[in-house]
Structure formats: structure tokens, C-alpha cells
Image 1: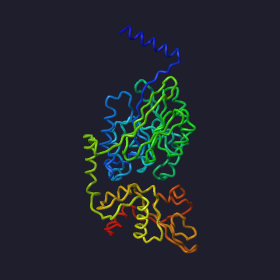
Image 2: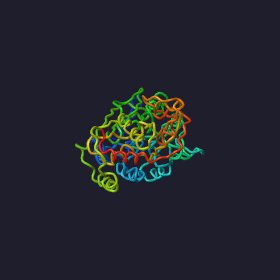
Image 3: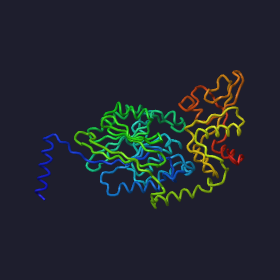
Image 4: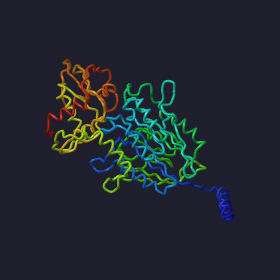
Length: 439
């Protein structure tokens, strides 16, 4: 035993003297944009019980694993909407996250509810750039240091600079984002002295992913969320990289790293996306039981026959269908539905009330304004023509009215929508019931 110890020490000293790096392994398992989808999608992919099984299989016997989530845990299913997200956090505790950050939709039930999510989470929730007017952080810490396999891994949380255009003043209250790159750079520089590797866990845009790679050499790995389509392959800049998987728990990311701890750099890596196929994976019993409990709470409300669809509507056609429903139900001349507010497709065949909840989980109101033809936004007109001086009624959601200048919205400013109608979800349910057959 003494000989083996002495030999290991001698080899270590020789390696140090020759400048040969000692590496340690690290495995980062990661998810993003789970969006409360407890059950598999129509393609049989995803579902929390099956994701849990995949996570546990990968973690079994793994001494170097951590599990990270890059935001938007809630919002996207009837359970989440009806109970304002809290059951989703409780079920997610069974997945065993090591750390997570917040996404824009985690604020959809108001900032006070978001704080309940943070308090309920059985893992640290980190974010470096959501603050109030006094510069106090929304969460307790901007980052956390995880120790695994002898490595000190600093995990920084960050939110996209677009948050202000992705929520409303009422939901965000006194909280706003500070510039993401600057905030992450400051925190990363502080972590470099205390850690062997810096990971950015971020809910950001494609452009922001690229900016991190180009301008933040202090960050070794970015685990990203916000864009639901996963990357085909990792984005690389030197020996630094960005990874992101499909949303709705359709994939589990596995990033295997060899880390040169003294040099605080990555020597090599492999990245793969593990499909969460509910036809091939067994459901984790404890997670399945928790999901079944909450689904039973809502099934009487949402699993009721609604109408029959003669074909499947993908999101572009569904946008037109929703705009038609708004016009017909309200008598408006024009209606605009923001594409980002449509969260699911409309399947062919028998439709349930649940389908509308999945398409429109948000509690968005329909609002109205009257405008001269010359003042109507072009994006709302489509191919129709108007008389410049004639007044027309335009119906949108309250979210679109508040964020009308944002990308994907009306792309204008100054329009007032003083009249309120019903929740868009309720309007759609009523319209589908009347139509009975959708074609």
C-alpha cells in the first residue's frame, strides 16, 4: 500500500515537472423547456416519468454526473395553468436536478409565484441578472459551486435580455434584467479563482448563445434553453461550447468532458442527445404516481369531447384558424395572433377541451381597439386592403397589446386597446363547440 502511494506521488510530480496535464472527467446531463408536459407528446416522445427513468439510468454508477435544467419548467399544460405551476416544481423535485435557472415562462403566474417555485425547488435556482431597482437579486445566489469527482464546477444562471418583451409589467413587478453578457462576465471572473470549470446555465436566444462564445472566454460550457428545437450538434469556439436539447422532455443531453483542472480548460468532449421514447422506456413509478395524481385533478375539466378536426393543423395554419375564431366570436374586422403564443398543434380526429388548453395555456385576454385603416399594422392585414380613413376593429391578446413593438408581434407602437373581452382560451373553446367540425 505504501509503495503504491509513493509511486502515485512520484508520477504526479513527474507529470507536473514535464508539464503533462492531469484531467478529470465530468458528465453534464441537461434539460431545457420542459414546460410542464407531464405526459408524452403525440409522437410518444417525452413525459416526466420516462425522463426520470432515462436520468436514473445515466446516473447509475456515475461518479461524475450533475443534472442541470435551463429554464421554463412550468407553463404548457392544464395542470400547470390551473394550479399555477407549483405541482410541476414538486414533481420536478423527483428528477434530481443539481441546479437550475429560470426561464421567461416561469414568470407567467406573476413574480410572487415564481418566488414560491424557487422556495419549493429541492435544488439551487441561480440567476445572475434578474434584479429590482435596488439591484437585489431575484434569487439568493447568482451561481453555485458543485463539487463532483474532485472538480469544482461553477454554475452561473442567466436570463435573456429579451425578458421585457416576453412578459408583462404586471407579471414582472419590480424585477428586470441587467445586461446578460456583462452580468455573466462579472460573475464568471469571480468564480474563476474558486473553480476548475465555469458553466453558464442560460435561458437565452440564438444570438446570445453566439455572443457568449465570442465574447466570454471565462465561460467553458453553456447549457442553453429557450429555443425548443435542440441543436443538431454542439456549437464550438476553440475548446468552449454550447449545448441545447429539444424541449418538452423529448431529449436528455449528455455532455462528457475531460477537464484539465489546473489550466481550467476542457481537453476533450463528447455530446449526445438521448431520446425520451415512451415506447421503449419504462415509467419511473414514483414520478408516474405523482403525475397521475395531478392529472386526475384536472381530467374532469379538460378531457371532455369538444369537436372533430378533419385534418391536423400545424402552427401556421392554426394561427389563421385562431384569428378566424376571434373575428367570428367578437365581430372584429381584423384579428392578430402572435405565433409564439401558440404552444401546440391541433391534431386530426376527436378533439378534447385539453387540446385547446395545450394550444393556449396562457391566461391571455382578448382586447380590442378601433383604428383608421392607415394606422392598422401591416402584419395584421394579411392580403386584405383597407380604406385609409375608415375605422376598423382590431382584436389581439393583452400580451400582444403590451408588447406590440416586439419581434413576432404587431411591430408598431402607440396602438391603444381599451376594451377587454374573454380569455382567449375560453373564446376558442366556445367557438370549437359551435363549429363541431373543423376543416
